[in-house]
Length: 113
Length: 113
Image (cartoon, rainbow over all chains, first blue to last red; front, side, top):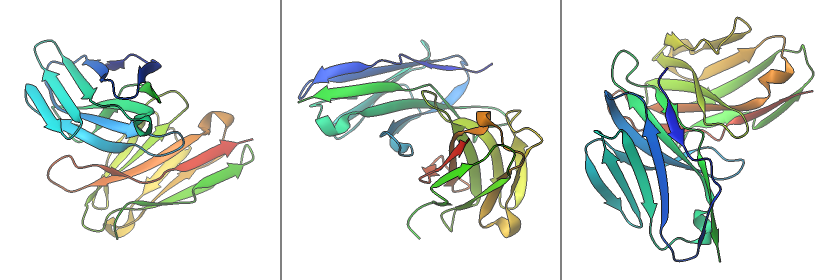
């Protein structure tokens, strides 16, 4: 059973702080990693993708991937109240179904003004 | 066509009734996916189409569920003899044949009473 694990939270940070969201996955041969943001009652929205070890930065967001530790994280700098949402980690595993996203349960982030 | 469209947005039905949902993907995307999301969980994969061919069905998709994608364009998901456990958000997504650029639709929220 291939799994993606996230702390369900809630994670609460003050406005302007760095929010750190973590995710572990079970299959060493995973190839692609994604972070989605989901506002309450809305559909997931892709915010970051990462495919190789290291950091990838996009504006206030940084994704970090460590394949040896089977760990992917998302940092949100200068957190804003509008960042309050559930953040879903998703993985595409290599092999026959290399199109299928496997999601974690998500971490609820609250940014307090 | 700037996104994935799903219809209806909300559906309330009585237990035992049949329901059908529609998804219109981004026109140039040949891959189409259905996911189901219940409260507090990440989306779970249901089925995948490449053009008009249904290439994978999850074990979550019981015999009461059927999906089609005639002519490789829009897709429908039908649930027969609905049960209360079918209450969930049903998400459709599409992507191009290369890369992993999933775009989700707004979802159809099903409530079975």
